[in-house]
Image 1 (spheres, rainbow, N blue to C red):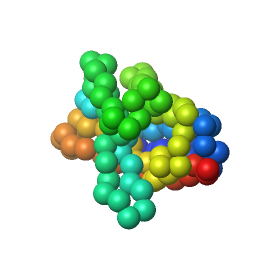
Image 2 (cartoon, rainbow, N blue to C red; image 1 turned 45 degrees about the vertical axis):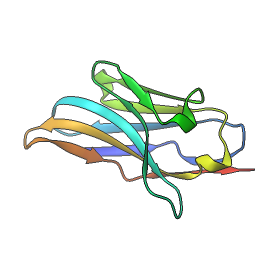
Image 3 (cartoon, rainbow, N blue to C red; image 1 turned 30 degrees about the horizontal axis):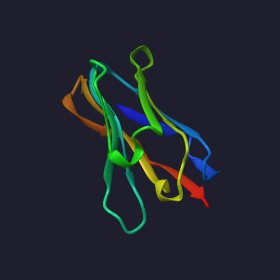
Length: 118
């Protein structure tokens, strides 16, 4: 199983970006999907998570600005980021809790850089 993230880039404050992350391989089921981020010199933090049932949680700092969604038919999770701030600058990592032919576990994407200029 592999997760491929895309959609990062450079944007001015107030702008928007949409991250995508697609899981591929022999996948039986996917439970939670989500996004973490790590800014330079800071600890990694959970940004948003969406369960297989559609329950969603966000870190307080992105509530009202970011929207997580998923397309189960495509094994893909999205993160729509609006009203971006310089403090959102970080490497964003997607993950998915997947049951595959080898068992169950968390799988991570390669990380995509998001840079917000002031």
